[in-house]
Structures are given as structure tokens and as C-alpha cells.
Length: 96
Image 1 (cartoon, one colour):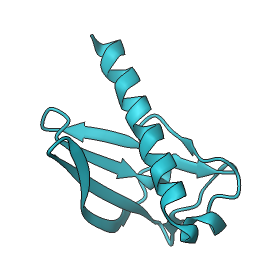
Image 2: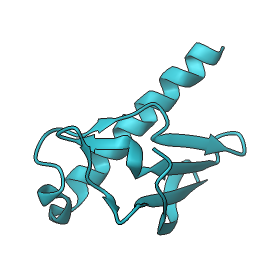
Image 3: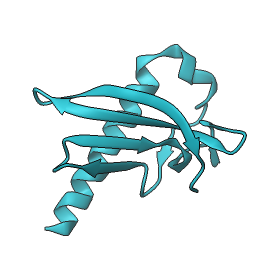
């Protein structure tokens, strides 16, 4: 069962990364190479109702491109009606 959840988490994380990189042209200068999500890029709470993205674990060309001055971008999404919607976006301490 754990392997099933790990696979779903990886698929969800990759999907979110693709959506983020395709959604806006502003990310194009951050990710020149295809982004690579690390193991803890996406974490889930409340039976996967809440998804947290930790951008220190998203690497573009081997570097965490969404970090600055010891802090990294974080986003929290809440599932409503079967779709994740952005709840908040902020910079938090780099836990890499």
C-alpha cells in the first residue's frame, strides 16, 4: 500500500511541476532544463486534501532555482471539488 501512495505522490508532483512550468512564461528563465522534483517536493496532509510543495527540492539544471537568501518558495494547495487550488504561496527557510 505504501508503494502505491509513493507512486501516486510522485505522479502528482510531476503533474504539478509540468503545470507550473507550462502555466506561465515567467518560470521559463528559472527552468531552462527540464525540472526534476526530489523525493520531498510534494507532501500531503489530511488524507491528501492538502498538498504542500517545497521548491528547495525542485531542481533545474542541478540547482534549486526557487530559493533566495536561505529561503525557498513554498506553496500550499487544498483539494476542493476534485481539483487542487492554491491556498497560499510564501518563502520559508531552506530545509534542503
